[in-house]
Amino acid sequence: METFLVIFYSYLSGSISFGLLFTKISINKDIRKIGSGNIGATNVLRTGNKFLAAITLIMDIAKGFIPVLVSKIYFPELIQISALLAFLGHVFPVWLKFKGGKGVATYLGILLSFSYGLGTLFIFTWIIVSLIFKYSSLSSMFSSLTVFVITFLRENFVQSINPNFNNETDIQQL
Image: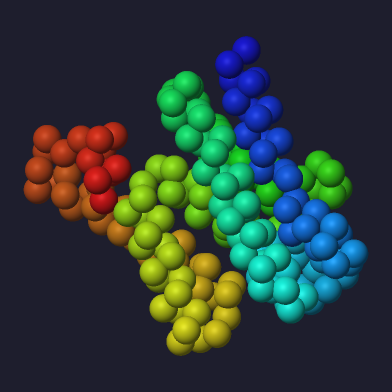
């Protein structure tokens, strides 16, 4: 029963299309017919409304962060399922015939719920790459790769040096 509950609230949270809702309510436009057709904050920014884009970004981060945090507190053994379903909810929302966004902001929220350090690394890398190359998608891919590499190196090399390395508690300190 707990697994079903976690799957339900995680997917439901992830599937809320804030970009679509905010642009429909605020400027009476369908974000899927603007720019890339994506429902995320980057495409909302293409409407010219920076405030809507910022709110969309914050809410898309929150819809990844909140269900995983709830699972972390109440169902710690199901945290990976919660993270996956929140992400899949954004990418494949049932309300939009399973055609959602790329899930970058939702991924960031999930990442922040696991480790503020890794979330900060993602944000920092995203900003730097974005300033250099001016492409949000490239920044997202490079930031995700950076987080993966740092996590991989930290877990493998630190553990080979220190066999007493405890991944569960130490990863949150990164």
